[in-house]
Image (cartoon, rainbow, N blue to C red; front, side, top):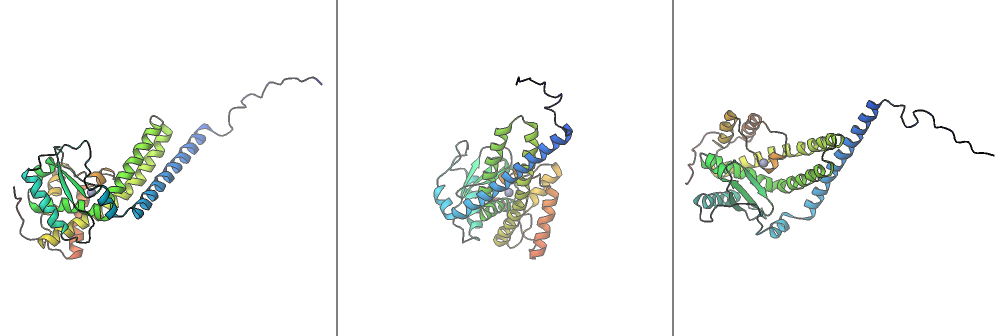
Length: 269
Ligand SMILES: [Zn+2]
């Protein structure tokens, strides 16, 4: 028998499904995959945190400093006073395994950060903008709250995860949508962490001064000029509205019965 080659049918490579439906199925599939990967990463970070105690972390990173950090002189008056204030605040949290170290970053942008091993970085910009010790104490207390909940490690893990995502799929629009979804999933978590850190910060301020007057005054000034406080954890969350944040703190203080009047302590420099 002779083999007769037949022409394939017209359109054999074209699917019967409408291209738009196929495209949205692809986007939905990829989005689901990225969200699952993001949640898996959160889970992995939680597992790591379970096995690496705060004590181990404090030991491992006892002398660690980020390589690109430009610090001020170690005899800087503001550095010494800020370290003393952190020590006083940490005195209200005696169970902690961290030994907190303060460094001042030479940057003009107001910022504070909680980093592995109990390292707290505040910027020159932040110290230029605080007008009382109570304002500074709240920012430092907020960072202590991140250590308490170990958000600093979660935030770092997430940051690394997201940059890996972005590096892998740069320039791919469909994957871009998936990443956006993963990003929003991750940010939702950091929003809650911010609120918890604020509550802890307020508790520290109350323990130190016996009232929470002026604790969030810095944020009120910033709200007017549309500035905002961005720390590492905040940076990864969906723009926390400063006004909402102030409202939350006010409500928290009221629930706890913390006095919002009281003598404000001037800065020591
Ligand atoms: Zn924060």
